[in-house]
Image (cartoon, rainbow, N blue to C red; front, side, top):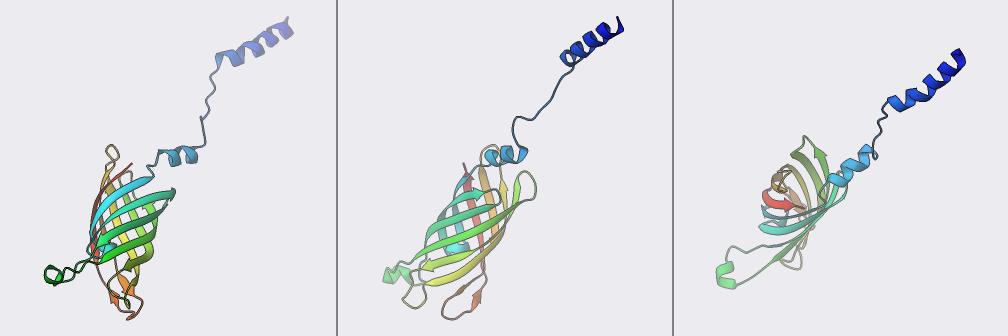
Length: 165
């Protein structure tokens, strides 16, 4: 009799308990929640005057940014000279909290100014604040650069407004 009641108890025990499990790996779940595309306008910064940029999240914490900008000369009104800048940077992104990221990047800006000075090594250190509901963001950056001829370091900064989707 004891063996039969023990057997019934062992069979009914699993039916009365609940089991909990995760649907998927937590790291994979976090990675799929990130929005991978950003488009934004940057004033000053890596595009030198202003630029429109596209940024793609390659993987969590790493992005590639490409842009196109316009760089006027001081006497641009009279000479009608137009210069195009093309910033390209690889950025490391560190989440500070749910809405704020620290960004550190390194890359180049091609500036079609004259034949001798067309290649700039540039970097970016910035803080980005993102609204998680709308994807809109604001970024402030320190963006020093140097050109391939003079090797002189120029200090600059940038302000960006854009949208992540």
